Length: 223
Image 1 (cartoon, rainbow, N blue to C red):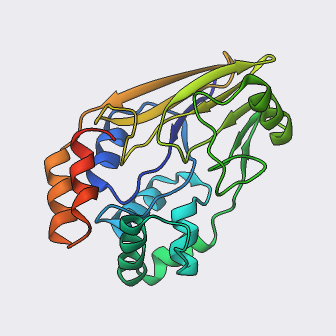
Image 2 (image 1 turned 45 degrees about the vertical axis):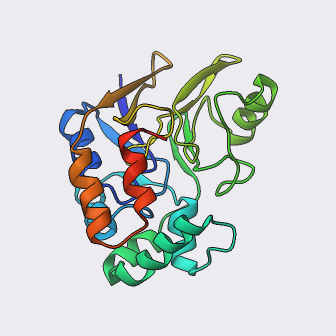
């Protein structure tokens, strides 16, 4: 049996990522994108992911910062993105530039948004079953892992599954705890886990970096 840890949407929240990695038990870890954006520690998050050998796909925030293009972002996301363009170091940028939009491991495929629109499509807990089936078939895998929505879910579809581990660094399902998943590739099961982290320290770092206060405030409520 291979146990796969799954994370997504860290968004520069080093405190949350460290808390997750401290408790996660897995043979390897996959990431469904968005290592940076919003949080105050883009370089530190990338460096930790590199040290841990975590395999990642590129997320929409990773991509936007690399391109310095934020036209379709809301105002505070765009402001954080422009801040990140200036803050991101050379080695960290190179790491992000090398990230693919698709990962495959055995019978698992990983995308940030979806197999059809890897960087932008939102596949939510309310996405119709027929649509999930189409995405699973398009992935070419039995197990499809997505990110982007910051909302965890797992749905079994035609003998396979589609899952989202939720967000490590900026949950949006009303639970302020960091969210991650564990995938059993043989048992075809996906379990979502939550872990407390130092929200106050993460929020304080955002404020001290003069990033939008909204990004700090939402950490306390998971929205």
